[in-house]
Length: 423
Image 1 (spheres, one colour):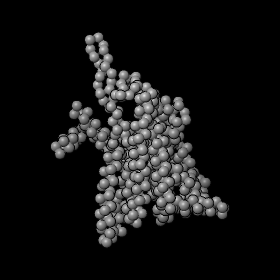
Image 2: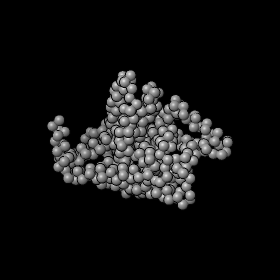
Image 3: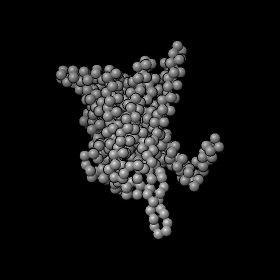
Image 4: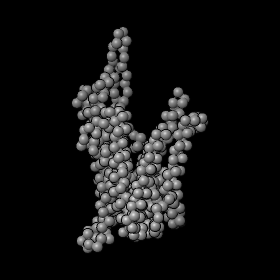
């Protein structure tokens, strides 16, 4: 308790850290104002019905920070930027020059890589904006627009997405934490009061044990997410002794931390994109005048309404993409080369190829546990809804992982700043 009070006092006294936190709060306030400004001509009642019955747009509402729930000028949110970043990560597998830029060229290479992601964001935002406006128009959420009105709305929402990406990067540079993650986190937290009020409005006294059980499960699951997110597999590393003149250098022992959840929340985003893109096209063609196209679209939408089929496919793709993304971001050969260049080795393992094989074996085993964890967390809302039968009692998924990850990251960064001040 005394340590907490002491750190709180240091937090208040540290002007630089205080300014960073105030900058984050100011940027989030601007974001929430933008998310409350709707584009013209919206049928609010039809919009709520459409969002409640469409999982694809429910996910996009999450990545827009709640901006899609009222078709605000930032309705696309940071979704295009996230998509562009994922595409760039996948391209590193096909183009060695991109992989070298991202992993070997240091800060300058990563800055250039990020610039390519920003450039790719614009065409993706245009494609998503055109698709959204056409789907919303066909679903009756928006009235039929003239070409000029359509172009004006498209320009506004694409500019809103680019603006939100810029705000996220400002938060990363002048605030604390990853700006994009913090924007999504703010949208999730902002939606909590309405979800809680909805649960209280539909409260049934006869289901008190169910609500208590849900509360206990929520605490246990959140604790498990924190534990798995922070879990590491330490690999012991020893630095060889070197003699310079009459002095010995090196010989220290440390460890290489391999995270259990190496891929983070990215596999869930991959899996959702793969599963929900067919639903987007099905929604687009569901009202088509062509009987064959509308029939196929209706069959796809009805198939995805089966929660157990959807959950099984969701779990499988999350498990698969966890291994895929871990292979993209973790290169045992490069780690082995870096250890060898620095005169380090894993006790009992020969440097070079043997070290690379040893690290690959370890990462394969711990990724299996991480993939199971991510798959279960992803389908947890479906399981909870099936057990309770109450739509509002849904726990888990992308939202929980993002909230936990952002809070832990902010806590680590604040603690690091305070430690630097103490030192």
